[in-house]
Image 1 (tube, rainbow, N blue to C red):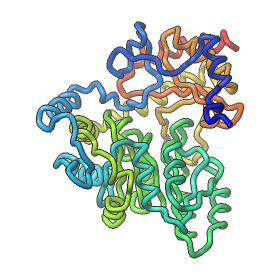
Image 2 (image 1 turned 45 degrees about the vertical axis):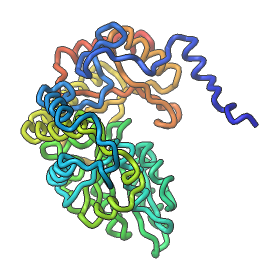
Image 3 (image 1 turned 30 degrees about the vertical axis):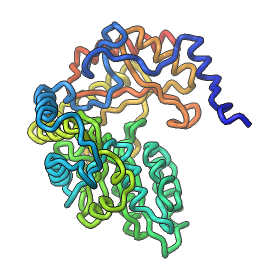
Length: 398
């Protein structure tokens, strides 16, 4: 059998032939609310730059100063010669911000989940995942020696069924996104915590899309529900609200020290470069000093959600009971089928609005989406312009 036979992808050939291929568009400007992409102005509704801090002058200046002081890279693992004083400072401030004892930084957000789960979950342990968890969580489960079980998305009855399958002698880690990256809905963390207590499980929350977005001052999902002291591990990334590249886990000192000395993705990877570390740290400072950014993001997200619904556009809504009204900045628009999704995204792109295609396996069959996402630096005028374009394109294509 030809090893490379699987590399022929008919759908890819089909969308390229139809000139509706949606990937690898070239950005020619900063990642802001408006961008220049392939020579044309586009309204950016496809970025995870939720607080708009990639263009913040304080954050940019911090990166420049770090380059001048430390150079371009650390040339080694955190475990050996690659730890900067700034790495240690960032870990301490992250732990304090999310309300945990300690934190460990990783070189990417994806690598964070690989490094945490593969270290924490052992050969005789079980890890139980929401079906819509991020791909990095699933790869972390595969890298561990434990057994993985999955439950239907945010279905707490199904989670309990999976917990009942685990032998009483096994350790259990329940892993969930806090804010789900594709659907924008929020995990039912209170019920997850209740079930974890009942079955002796530990809880890990991937807050890549929750940090800087929900909770008091952007402290994330556990804080939003008032459950920080009942969650065992919080993971997040620097490439969303913190305007950089990298990731971290926050936990008790006991767990953090174990991961530092046991996680192969942590031990055998080069550390976060100085400029990335400095920009993440300064973005965290801006976030702490400017909680109004989080409020502004929530207001704009609600503005857009209501605007889409008023225009009769079908969007995905969160089903989790929430303690207070909460509009996350991820708003998926249903397009249902792959080719319709490609065509609509291309029309929007040509009209000056960038959105992201979401297809199976990232969604269930026949539930394809256009994932739109928003920044605190958008304006109502920009969003009104985008709404008019989205409404026109979707109604013309209907």
